[in-house]
Image (cartoon, rainbow, N blue to C red; front, side):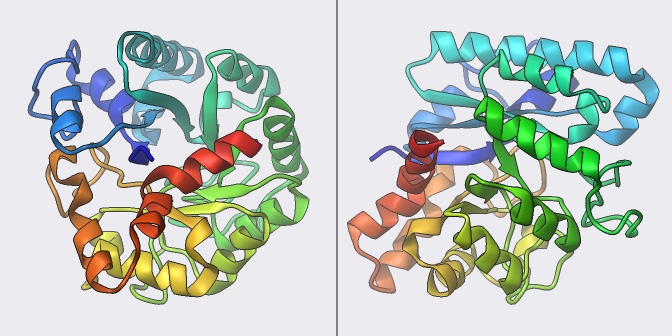
Length: 287
């Protein structure tokens, strides 16, 4: 069973640092030699622009820059033997236009992270002041469009009220691609047991991140174990957020660091395979 990371911020690094050839060793957290060294068989390469960058560029130029990121990621999909998927982080990029979302789908995107660090006019962010009480009717149209297009809906970064609204109006599995457990560390980007249970009830999957500020005093393995004890082995994966935040490891070369502690806890090889990629691949098969 392959190792798959469900959130690698490759697209933004390609935008920020220019012409980086991931087929060669780089000083970034993610490149193909490092993936090979770390036994990482694939992952979701996320296309993303920060809110401040979008403020400066405006909607059309932001879309053009995302198109460039998608083109580069698609190139690596075609040229690499690794399992590369595409995610879009931040629903602001659709500019309140479902046709843009449908356009993104022509690139074969795996999921849409609905919101990032700032509220949108149709959904509240977990790291902003509540504005609309969760999600609006247009937000529900976004959910419906994603599910019709075969795009997974990602609630990482969404507020609790928004997430509960998404789940109430969804008919397919919901994911949180890179969120820790708030019961272990109270951070606005982590998710409560109520949200964790609700995602399980959609047959969804939660990706545990490597981000220092999300983990607190706990390890990745401890967050994984807590999630497994709460919702079961079939609903937990890994979404490291490498190349997107300050993580406890510097590179995907050390991607498997969480496996040995789980083995010591008594997790079987088949259990670890599910967490390492099996659960994500199952989700893609049913979506």
